[in-house]
Image 1 (spheres, rainbow, N blue to C red):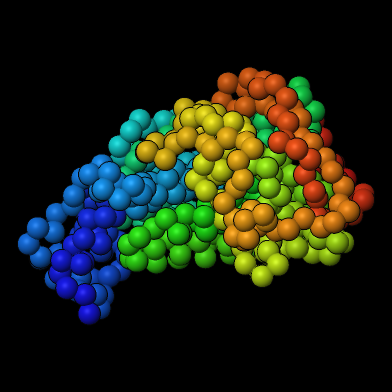
Image 2: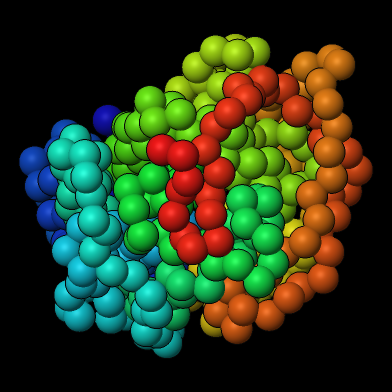
Length: 383
């Protein structure tokens, strides 16, 4: 169906650096694929073109750069879940690569009380570890190393930004299963929107298929976390986390809590029943815990590895926002307005001044009164 010139061009376009194609074919399970895998591997001149030249010709971000951006996020999720379920992080052989390999601060085994939640956490931890291994195999020698990750003060910064605790208090995501679920909620929804937002940027269909598969897995994970939060009566703190994400990723109201108009909102969708996406820059605004255009902070105190490493900055219209018709959630008329202020950036735990949203945010969710509050000790009171 495709001649060898087209296939070579498609694969070469995907390289952030010269990639090991055979490792990718094996990792993707395509050794007998019907698009000429054997021809691809044996075709003359099938070696990768340098990414810089490809990017310069097309003006587009390479597929390899996008996958490496995703790998940074998978490192973060895997380290969080591994520590919550086992008390240990990723094995060393899954953390090497290009760029500076960083350490991980924080994290410990969660004293789960509910069997189902413990099993959910263990299942997700296994999946995230497999995502790391798969992306590393797909990228081969181009895979970035695990960057420095903060699983300690960053969560306190996020909790302050969300208004779950006051400045000077601390939030321990590993103190109990309620705090663990709230912390996981930060990651899972962002992971889904990251893969959704990056999908239109991927040109190689093999890579796109792999990314779609991971997106589906992340969506299942997010559904598990959102359902567990809802069943535990944590609608109000989850809604505050959603609002905090909205205050970081731009001027549109994209994010959704786990309730809408008093009912459950386990699957956050737009009016067409479609999930929304975020650009890599918007995702970095959230994980850096900073609405400005920066290259480090929050969960990645030294930044992420790879070429996609700069956050977008507040005030820009997010791709997929309600005003663009690209998948954002249109605000409900008459909803209350609010402005987010106050933020601690993790890593150095330094105060970053007042984080003001670029205008008021129309909130479209209704939250039930009487939900438990997060105490300064790191525990959730009233559960």
